[in-house]
Length: 326
Ligand code: ADP
Ligand code: MG
Image 1: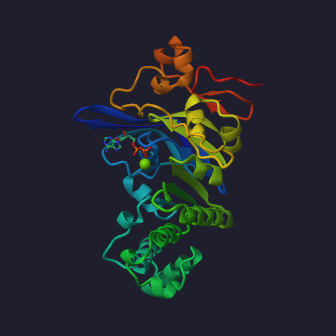
Image 2: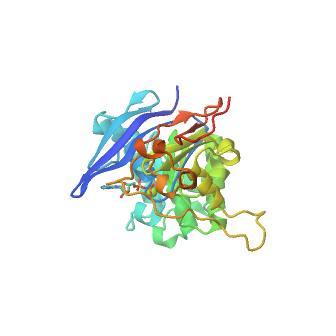
Image 3: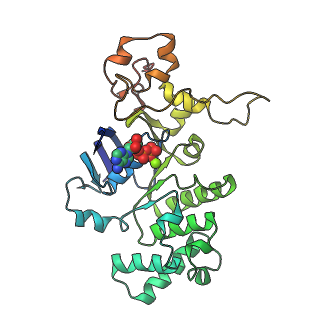
């Protein structure tokens, strides 16, 4: 059974200014032991997608289907989803300092989660907290479990949040920009830790990031989001070697490269992400698209182009100009 199967997931917020269509019908799957990377600029709907999967979409209208190990979560009783969350599926956020409670020790917070989901004794739960802190590479875990979040460095706090997520032995972890606030060395260590834990425990992992460099390091499959929609979906290698959407190519061109010549400039994508209240007609990327600029086609502005298969390996692109290979 596929661990997570998401179909036509859409999320809308009713605001005073109008309806914000934050996610416009995305499909993806996560198998055990695999990592799905979701990448896109800020505001593309990555976090809203993950919160909807976790049932944490306050005030939003969510439609579509989210099957977790075969069970439908959309429309399921809040209590059912609450019991899964933190237990069989867990989330790691960018900012551990806001995700962790400042007034409780790290060990207490992990132990509390264990007690809540397993009804374990204080002693057992505390022992489990110390054990997972050790698992994520925190030195002297028995002592550090008694410390508060502010006593941890940024990287150690992020490890503690991973420990919290792991404490109930989840099958799925969604990590939303987990390393964005860290410097590059610590970022690499935390990503390596997540990959190691995924391998050892056969976890399904969703890695959400604006950084294709992170995707290259961890993802098996990739979903590229733009303006709340999936614009490209493929295996990780295919995305890097054979991108089929101008937006993905733009993201790749703005990646720093080791082999770039001296003084070779990075090419940031010009323009700004679209408004979700009043998105551009047709393909939301067309106002920034070099292909459209060179050869404006009505197909780019008439209707939002659907994702379609462009290669036999399942590679999908939402660009009307995408090359299709047999
Ligand atoms: P990302 O994680 O890709 O940076 P988000 O998923 O956080 O982007 O947000 C996608 C869009 O949804 C943004 O334009 C944001 O303003 C909008 N959005 C998120 N939450 C709400 C909300 N509660 N009410 C209205 N709009 C929201
Ligand atoms: Mg986000």
